[in-house]
Amino acid sequence: MSDNNYLDIILAKCDEASKAKFAVVKNEEILSTIANRIELCNPKDLFIHTGSAGRSRLCQKDGFRNE
Amino acid sequence: MKGHTIHFDPPAEQGRVVKQTYAIEDEGVYVSSMANALPRAEADDLIQNNMKNIMDGKTMIIGFYVRGPKGAPTSYASLTISDTWYLAHQQDNLYRCNVADFQAQVELIGLFFTNTHGKGSLNTKEAYIMTDGKKKETWAWNVSYLGNCALIKKGHHRLANDDAIYSHRGNRLSEHMFITGIKMKDGSIVWIDGAAPSGCGKTTTAMAGDTFVGDDLAQVWIAEDGTIRSINPEFGIFGIVRNVNIEGDPLLMERLRNPESEVIWTNVLIDDKGVPH
Image (cartoon, rainbow over all chains, first blue to last red; front, side, top):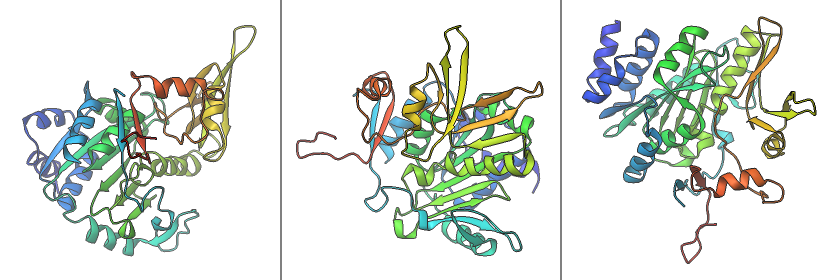
């Protein structure tokens, strides 16, 4: 599987915000690892957690809502 | 209290599921580990059968964490892939999350660790925790207790330990150690790393110093100039508060009772008036 295939698999699960966050990830091994996990676990979408401001509060809030 | 969260784990999973924790073993390679050894073919089948579609209908949360400050040769990049917001929330309180720093550390060190966690059924009897030293991966499913699913901590510590022993023997240590500094009369600071098993006072001892750096994990190495360097892979505290009190642990109690501190409580009992203890 090529670099582009990995990225295609990942981007197909991303909204526009996550696509933008993912643009900085260039390492092929990182891309292949994530793409393989997507194919195995089959999530409906991805949340790319890059350490942006307020991240913890966002996860806390979503944690309450979803779990 | 503002900034505090209470998390509830399944009744059967109030601690680590040690008997269901495995180290993946390749043929002809002996795994010296407190975990149970599991042949690779068997482990691969279990992963494929149990993780297949485990996030169906859910969001996959991908976290780019670094186990230590950027630039240190022992700050390993640690990729966390999970369907649990609680895990992301907890790891944000304990590890640095930054995608650019993650990539920089992958380039610097030449490797990264991956933890894949599926919440699954939360049926503890069907839970698995696996460490794959060869692929530098950890896996966990049907678990929620952080000791079982936040494998960036103990699981990836084991992988860091392997790297220290097999790739940097005699130059590095990756250990369960606190790091603290004690100020001398002349103003200099004597730095101390110390080891003790869980529940034996590492946090309390570390906080007795004047400059607290870490209470659980330490990466130690000999720098090019011959000096000994040490970092804490974490930047928060994960621990048991049994027997913690204002006399013995004033700094810790202040942090736990401060509304500005973000604290996640687990294993909390709620009385009939709805008050947590």
